[in-house]
Length: 338
Image (cartoon, rainbow, N blue to C red; front, side, top):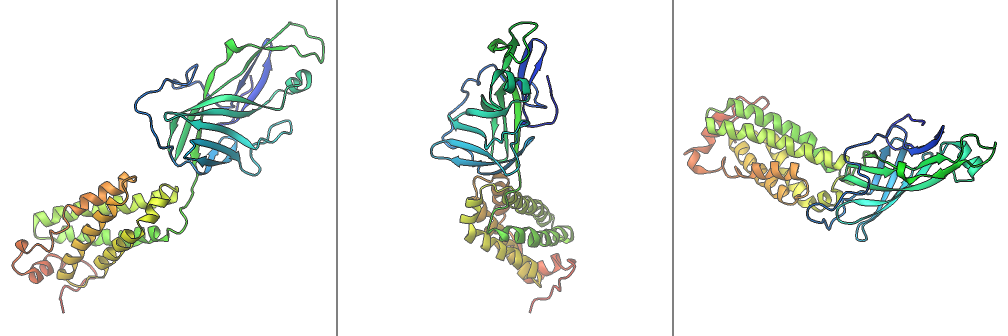
């Protein structure tokens, strides 16, 4: 049996009395059963958004998804999918989502010339597959090998000496990873990460120079949550995750950016305190619009819990003097209000 490589390459080889069809580099895995796994848990009605470019051991594939129908086609990119004896596979797999797994037919290459020459079998063939993990970023699954055995020990040259033996079939593992699919028209996410980094620095310094322990704790927490939120947006846009949802939240995203810039542009403690309140409130609103991005929505909703802290008059009889003193140590700020 011939093996080598990784990911999703295939082998069809003859050794002595048997032939086993496998993906090169594929291994038996605990999740790969003799048949697709039984349905577990509640049936999902939503197929993940798998559209875009993916990478496996045999190169790039493009997934096209009919989400309403639950159907997925995986097409090889130009230059990928070539078989060793000339054939080029246009399609890697075609499958349908049943609410639990994606399953269908996967196209493999024949890697033994004698099978094509002597038995007149094709340079490609299709086998069953099903998924064990299916997310917007990763696909893992199992495909079925084909086992063949020799009919007689000393065949006549040029004679097909193989017969199908399904008792030797196995299920082996494969994996695909989504490549970078930068969301189009979402440059504001890059901008959010850039200006957010400056605001994080201001908040961090403010937390350290604050003379009030509660203020320091709130700012320290906000600094970490702001970083988590803007970095989550950047990751989501980079891998093409929930592009439509981020785009639909454009108004909330712009208000959030305005609030970040208000923090960065504040020139005295009173204005900075007000900017913090605006930032926390805008973050909460944006988080509510992005429920399918939990790493973003959770961070921003937690920030919103303190959205009135800095402007609450119960914290200071003289907000101008209080906050000017609190934040006077922040580099780049002149803590004197006009």
